[in-house]
Image (tube, rainbow, N blue to C red; front, side):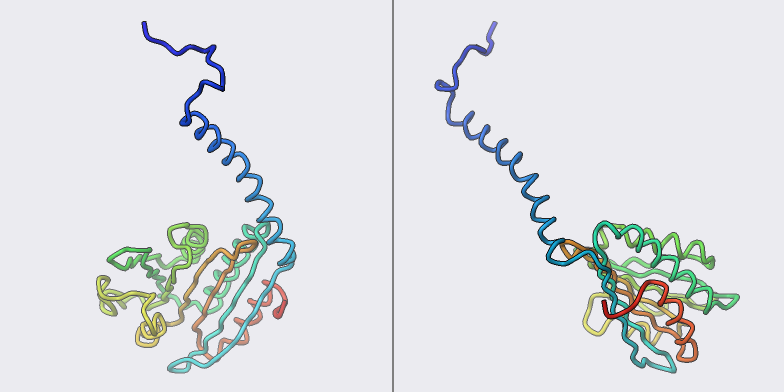
Length: 223
């Protein structure tokens, strides 16, 4: 019966065995090195939360509020939940009885844009929004959130094979022509030692005071 001589010394092993051993050693060394690099990035960045907010005008009596959150990795889950809760509170503040929420996005290398009916409930909006924040396939992608009247159809606004939220001038062009009650565009991206949450809110101008008050819950701006 053929077998392997376990008494073979390292000196008699072939170059393939030595290369394999070196590769294993490299993996062992790279794992702690990656952790060290992550810690160094964290030290350089600091441990604080950074928030920026800006308001500009938009079409048809709407205002745009841009929110950028730079969140340390260890605070990502906490602030992801806080951001989700804030979005739900905004939806509640702007709510009309026949509001229905919709989500539009296109994954990397996909040939079709996804159009998902989120539903009319605040709980449905919150659950879907939090899921999108943590969905790896949507990292750095633009997710568009439309609040429409129940009798409006997203399918009349766009062709999923032709429309791309990542195209130049989008999603602003879609939002401007949609007849929305209000809307959002969200992205989540890695910043090395932090996670970057970006949210663009498109809301009625008469409601901006209430929206800013709700956004204040996330922390002071300018950090």
